[in-house]
Length: 440
Image (cartoon, rainbow, N blue to C red; front, top):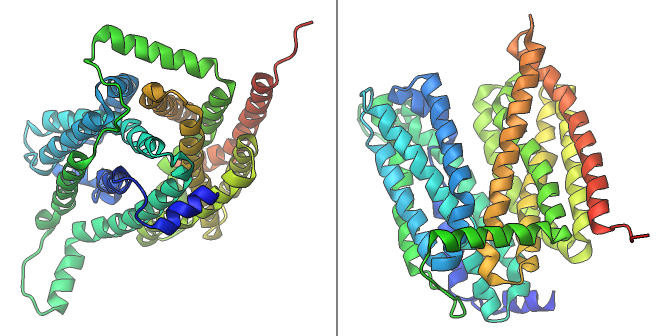
């Protein structure tokens, strides 16, 4: 902790890559179209089926490229991979922003957009974080990584809050028209006028992200090589073998996967849940912005827990918070059920902090860092996909003659018990891994 205070006291004592890493994460992830994503695709002229297919293409792109991109980053350098991710983002947003509305080319262009978006996510995943951590390690400041994470999470919370509210405002032609009228400006603003404004704003973000990525530098100790298929496969196998032979890391990834997949599953149906507890739809954006506010305050708590408790104890804290939140959702409390989002939002934010801190501290070989972090990303995406399929199948069984709202309510009542059972299984498995029996 003394080392962390020294860094904070110095103000600008961090290597130059650290503020650039924070800026890149902010502009890469702060996407103004997120609050209107579903309706935006439909307003451009897609059908619900086409929108669902685009989401599948996006997920498959990430799953297929996640680990290979990490292995390639460990060979050619993390900076180059981050720059490539930013380039992918610029192209994907240009395609999205200027896709011809209602044209036969709309679906193929947006399909390419989703594939490039997944490639961008996979390319940045692990590479940017590895670059930042090794930059601290190079100057003997790796102990300050929790401070960097806390600063990153606070700035990301601010950016998320602004883009969630701002994206909705940019898309709302009525609001823009009323605001201009209040200012005495006469203008004819229609929904077609504002349809692409969130996309233009995000395209601007992508250009800033590319500029920031180009300013990053590779740590001097990095050993770069020309990537080959054989080297990428060997790198991937080496990282996978290391994870399987390192019980602490395996427990961390599997335990984090359980918490992450269940909370992300709930967040997928969050708007349906808010409607179920009779919250007015006008407040949905405020609830999403509230999640960003929660993320602003959790880094300090996460730092304290990392300093005072073991990894196992902190994972149990997250499991407990998740269980409390899920039980509250299962009660379907009118209006007051919104309180369930508090422990779930906190647990999700703290989990990202714990994973980054413990994984980077555990990976002593910097040559494997991006690959290991990519394995984590792959595991979490697969876990989320499996959880989604199981939830969808269970909901379909519950449907019968019931309405979708009744089926969702029934599924939400079962979810905490399923998570509790999963937690017990993980506790037994984790204890067995961390405390193997001595041979007789």
